[in-house]
Length: 384
Image (cartoon, rainbow, N blue to C red):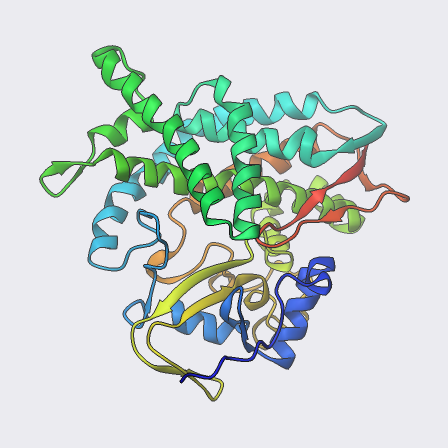
């Protein structure tokens, strides 16, 4: 009889929830390879995470019970689907989308009150993430509110691990997308010429993509975009409010924003973790790991590893960008990174350009998000 593995930590404890970054720093130094019932085997060190990312044969991405295109696939299947997806994030598409993204950002920033307290998540970050995602995919504005509700439901179901709730949430999203696909097919030549219509014409091998595949692609993009971009905007706004010297620098030298954004999001991660499963026995830190072991890569720790970055909280613009795992690494590096970088740069450009100052609210500290979310659950800031 196999002995029950003793848990090394509790990812859902109050200590972790209070300050995820500090808790992961502690785990990286004290127990860098740790088991828990909730996250299975977690890896906290940059070197261990990179080992997994660069060896997809040993560490498979096929971990989800749902079809996950291409995130939950391994080569050669992953390679085929990736070749379809990457062109949607080409430099040409980013150039075309930039003015659309900027118009949305300007409109939302101008709608913020001045010389007053603003709940930045609810009044800017979440709306920005939803509106740019719908604009990029060609979805109607009446999906804004349902999508925000869907993201909240998905987060709650993921946190509890409720399989029935997860199935219900997935079906709700699938219903929205299948309706959009049906509408476009009924419209024929009059269908909007957007990404959703284009995916319906894409082929894998000698056949068209199935609806299940299109829905999976769009679900992955939407989950990745809405929650993560909103978290990123909140983290960035909070950081410049907390570090006035950085805010002043970026107001004076806007060209530094791209590097500064990546560095701030290295310091405070917008995405906490990702999953893999072993295809053969391996060893980490003297611990024997069997075949079929589920592994959680703690991005939020690896990107703060002292052996790579020195002081994890040090804000530096001269770091080697290849070490930053903000968008992953290896064959599964985020294909949507060009879009995310464009959106975040524009959000911060317009937030800084159309305000005089952003500050913390002395008697209203932000509320940290709880795993699997990142960033802030509530973010009161003073806007001038």
